[in-house]
Length: 244
Image 1 (tube, rainbow, N blue to C red):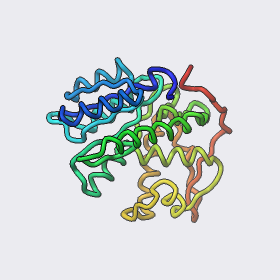
Image 2 (spheres, rainbow, N blue to C red):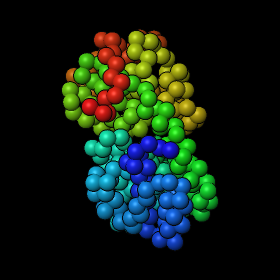
Image 3 (cartoon, helix red, strand yellow):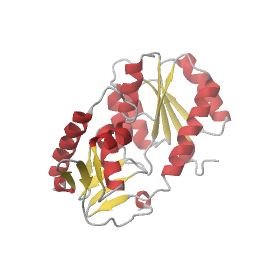
Image 4 (cartoon, rainbow, N blue to C red):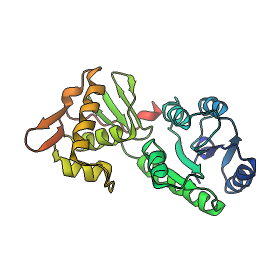
């Protein structure tokens, strides 16, 4: 069981009714509350008015930018940020990497097995349920909430790309420790062989620039000849930030 009814809500966004209906039916039989929409603009409205726990969306919605919907999902003022699974006929490695980099939790290539989709839905929700037990990170008024995947500074939302969020999360989680570029590549970029150590420098500079507006750029420090660290006052743990 996933808890409250809100935690069972799944939104499917796909123009292909023949694909959507069997999936909607099987997810409903599995105990979820499912809505299916063929229009991307309507999906943006639905995310705010009927907050889903998870969105399953086609990567290619005519007349609508998938990135816009992803951003709407991530920034919707909902009690808990929705998880995202992309369905797509695009099976190229770069297509998959792009989808995951933009914020998807999983990427499933069409045609697919409905049993596989349901298994992946449960896996994504199970993993996030574990993450939701983790406290938010708070340094002064800079807050990273792993439950909602939101970063706020002095009460204002900070918009970060996926890699910038992961970099900040890793550094904040290990505040005071210094990491060289190779370590940051391994922890933040994983097995992506297309990036080098210069990528770390570029993203650190981007992150500093974003944090400069609220005045927190100095929290990310350069340790000359070695790497980077996050240095700030000790965190005040916030166990249930998303419930306040």
